[in-house]
Image (cartoon, rainbow, N blue to C red; front, side, top):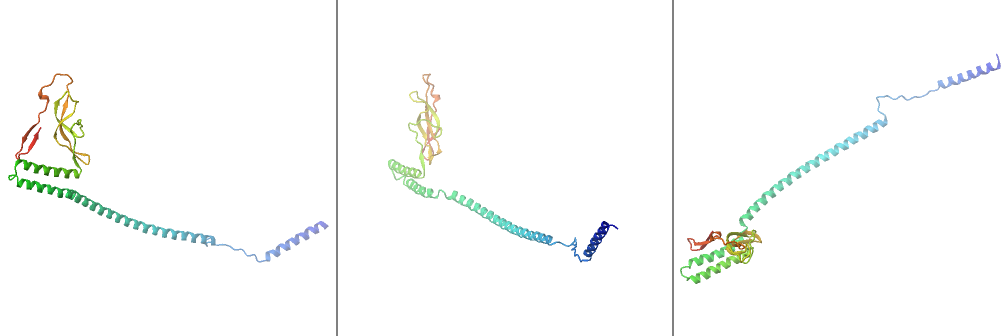
Amino acid sequence: MSEEDKFDEESSDSISSKGNGQDDEDIEIEVLDPGEPTPATLESGEEALEEIRSLESRLQELEKEKAELQDRLLRKHADFDNYRKRTEKDKQEFKRFALSDFMSELILILDNFERALAHSEEQSGQEYRKGVELIYRQLRDLMEKKGVKAIQVEGEQFDPNYHEAIARELRNDLPDNTILEELQKGYLLHNKLLRPAMVKVSFRTDGDEEQSGDDELEVKTSADEEGWEKTEL
């Protein structure tokens, strides 16, 4: 046997003996059960459970808040309904008694009319007229105090916003629609039209043949049953 063969055999025996020695040693290998949760899995499950508990708690809070808001909404609705009914009642009361102050002052003038009528036979015509004029001025002053004033028409041009023309008269010496006469007074209430003034206005022919008297509306007056003069159109 050659030297090289001996060296290879010794090397092979040496390696074999070393390998057998390692096999004899105890080597611990941990085998995990697939069904058993790992620590990482346990930690992840606990976090998920805690998150579920947190969401359930938040849901309960939201449901409680929703119930409180619904209760507040119902209360507000009831309060508003009561306020609306109370306002409507106050409005009706205001309509019924809005003129109470004015009527209280008007009663005083009514008293003076009753006194004048009671003594009408004892007084002469002139004295009776002065008494009625005094009551008239008293009534006029009261109405002006409350914001009622007569519409001025003397020397004014016809204005459809404040006047109502119910008669015309041919007047070539005046511009068209000049107010000639006031047939019934008009009134304003705080500068808002309460009743238009009924007036007679002029018109022109500008050299044409004068028209007959049929173009002019006549205004006649007659006395009513109580002796007061009234206007018939």
